[in-house]
Length: 336
Image (cartoon, rainbow, N blue to C red; front, side):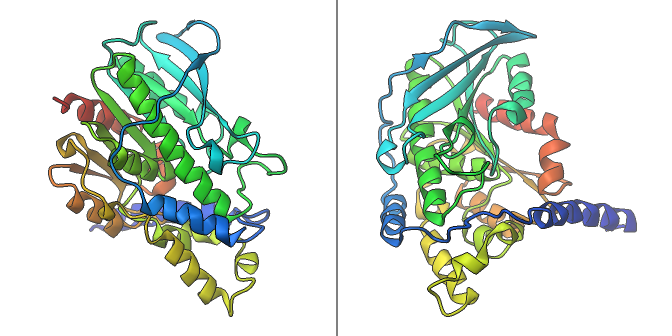
């Protein structure tokens, strides 16, 4: 590696460190782990994941398709199939649809899932527009606990407890699985699921639940979540002074957190039905997601492709839009 390469790598990593350090207060999990019994039930819910038919949903359309530059847009909602684990005010799953025409039947489609803290749809619209320009419909899901689905009392996208985090992630997977099934009912012949960071991990689990071929494009995501939440840059954003309450010290709290996260590992499940239609996109200098976790996921999915970006976690998201769109379009093309 040349001096210039080393400098660029350091700058990418430094950008991630700055983002993690700027979080300050207020912080994530300011009310600690939350109800331990509720958390235990949510952990068992993840342990019980396996391939199954998607939950049927009734889509409520919010008006007709509206013309935009280069395509059409529409919004909709449905009752979450995981409503029983969600607080009031979060049960209605919200979707924004972008398509090159008003009829989805016959179009390939991609479900785009939200990154950590990503409220609304604005940050995903550029990627959606790039997909529409290439003949692919894009559907964006608003996570429970984010944006218009925040529960009463929550400030911004700052989840108050670890139990809330587990509820959000498991509900998002169930909702994404249901949307994938609905896209199939609408007549989309090739369907993909993708997301960045947290959204990428949710895409991995959605693929694990889907019992038929699905293009899967996890971006900035690895096989497991343990180190992300307990050791790496994201963990600096947590209220460890509150999380350690009831434990001997912070190290004990981190061990408990890691135990809760043990089932959040793609290696517990069989590879997706169409691993040849899986493309992993990762950044070499990512301080939030470890390269070894990305490599582990790639190794567990024989036939999948791994593409590296010369970027960090943040710069990989904002400076490589064309590569993100290429990965999705290429993965869809590999579905038979």
